[in-house]
Length: 244
Ligand code: SAH
Image (cartoon, rainbow, N blue to C red; front, side):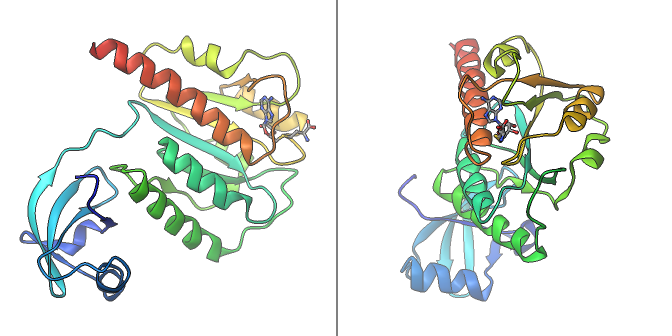
C-alpha cells in the first residue's frame, strides 16, 4: 500500500463513492505522477479518513476505505513564534513529518516578521505535501497568526509547556513523563531573540510550565522540531508498551 501515491482531497469532493477531482488534482495525478486510467492511488481527507481509489477520467472511483495507524496517540499543538525569513516552512514540514496536530504561528514581543496572508496558503501546501509523504492520516491544521498573549487566553484542558532557553527548568522529557493521561499537549517555542520575561510570566499565569530542551541554545527553527521529537518519542514508547 505504501507504494501507492497519495493525494489530499476535501470531504466535499467525495460523492456517492466517487471523488470529483479538481483540474489541479487531475494534472497532478496524470502529468506529475503519470497515473493512467484505471491506476490506483490513495485519497486522504486530512481528517483521518483514507480511501483506495481508482482513476477514471476526471473522477476517481472509491474502491475501499483504508485503516491507517500513523498518528500519535495524543494531539500536539505547537505554538511557534514566527522566525525570520522562510524558517517557518522548515518547521511546518518537519513537524508535520513528526506528527503535529495543530501549528499555531504566533507573533511575540520580539518577532521580527509580520506575516503576509499569502504565507498561510504556502504553509498549508507544505503541510499537505509533508503529510502525504510521511503517510499520515491527518493533515495538521495551521491557524492564522495571532499575538502570543491573545492566544494564551484560549481556554483548554491541555497540558501546556513553554520552552525557555535559559534558566534551570525541568527537561521537557521529564515533564512529559509525569503526564499519565491526557489527550492534548500544547508546546510554545520562542523567536530568535527569545521570549521576554513578561511573556514567560503571562504564560505561567495561563497554566504553562516552563521547560528546557537541554543545555544548548537551539535556533528558533530547531527548537519546535526538537520539542516535538522528544514528546513523540516519549508518547510512542508509552503507547507501544501499553499495547504489548
Ligand atoms: N536568543 C535567545 C535564545 C532564543 S532560542 C537567548 O540567547 O536566550 C529560540 C527559542 O527556542 C527560545 O525562545 C526557546 O523557546 C527555544 N529554545 C532554544 N533552546 C532551548 C533550550 N535549550 N531549552 C528550551 N528552549 C529552548
